[in-house]
Length: 512
Ligand SMILES: Cc1cc2nc3c(=O)[nH]c(=O)nc-3n(C[C@H](O)[C@H](O)[C@H](O)COP(=O)(O)OP(=O)(O)OC[C@H]3O[C@@H](n4cnc5c(N)ncnc54)[C@H](O)[C@@H]3O)c2cc1C
Image (cartoon, rainbow, N blue to C red; front, side, top):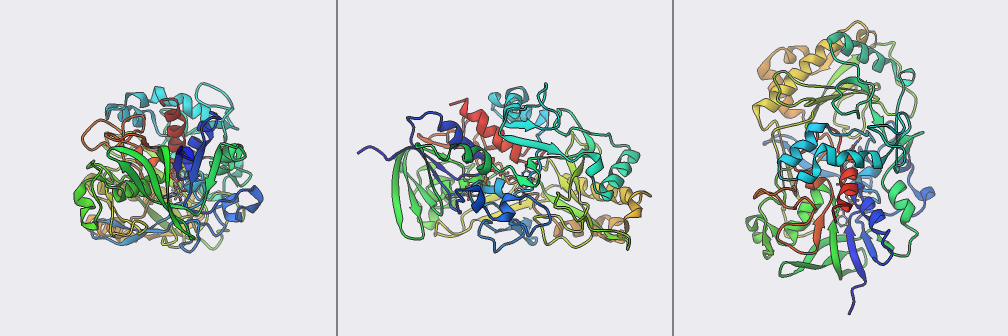
């Protein structure tokens, strides 16, 4: 009997929706997209907080009870506090719940990927796909920007910045940082406006762009509220899936499987299917298909912490629906071997999206854009639908801790600038006495790390013994199964991950 579908894509997120769009051009290929979360087949049916990407709505990411949020829990630092890990469980995946900051990695990020055994992923190789992806409404078509892509991109001009942004910008310039009008220009650094894939408040998710354009086609089928619990193998060849829905569990057979379930669920699904280090799953009764020790290892993220200041009585909460962090600073920490290894998102209101555990006050989110430490995704139960163990291992090296300590001290100085002091008074987290004392500051950091929302690297591509996929996304040692999502990044990039995940999907299609 012929299989019902030629290709099954698991997950409709940033990568999955793009893969579906591009593969659907071949009308002879019958494609099924399976999504664990809800589908919203018309734009009008989208919940308001998915359609709009506002920072001051009750965001999906900050609400654990929202059905569109997987709402994972994780160990932050070794033995440290449990933190929230939001991810999108909805058509469009995390692109439907994210903050829409549209930032490319820097040249060195992709050139390092090539050094890890992926010569088709140098900066020169990926740059054309950044151009293909975007429709940059500020810069239009030029050497570094595109105007024909699905992703409309825009920055907030200076006249639309909030007063705190103006003050932060001036303080950074006076501190000695460069002006950076276009963060997406290669080799740029310094302080300036962030680009957003949000236009007039409307989120440019991959569902509203790439999927919307093809979902009417006869060869695209979408099954939502369907959770893939296992991939089925005949020896080393993937032949089908086990799927759970509210109504029934069933098996489905297909010619080709593309895993786009994201950096947490893709490795979990492989481990549940017997692909990975057998010591990590044999005690749950799972039989080994292939010993691939890298599955679930190399969990990368952007470890994030914050500095918060008390507001002055004259401070007025921005009332617009626009993002709070319109301006960012990228810089290189002292003696670092990595350029732009730090980023600061300057919030102009008293709350930033996604991390409600951060206290009230004007906040700057300080983030390690290239950490040294890596964590792990592992199974914790014989039930394939159970949430995995997530250990992020933030501050796993002295250098990671030292760079964040330096960053907090820089932000304290910037906050003392006279322009900034018009809006804020005392620094209230960390307390100034903590900032001055190395041991106290280390202890404070250990307890105050949260996710930068950029989980990646858990099925990394390359050719070393810990690589899980080759540079075409094919799972090493297996047939008919590929992975394309944030999990295959060999290392995290020095930027928010969405633009790069989308570029990876666009690029990889041309490698097949
Ligand atoms: C709160 C938040 C804020 C962020 N802000 C930004 C930002 O401003 N800028 C930026 O660049 N990046 C941001 N990111 C990160 C960025 O959105 C992600 O890196 C990117 O969306 C990941 O894409 P992906 O394709 O790997 O996975 P996802 O987009 O997460 O897609 C995975 C999909 O697979 C589905 N799925 C998972 N397991 C299964 C299964 N077993 N069966 C069926 N379906 C399954 C999921 O429901 C989901 O739809 C943010 C992320 C979050 C969570």
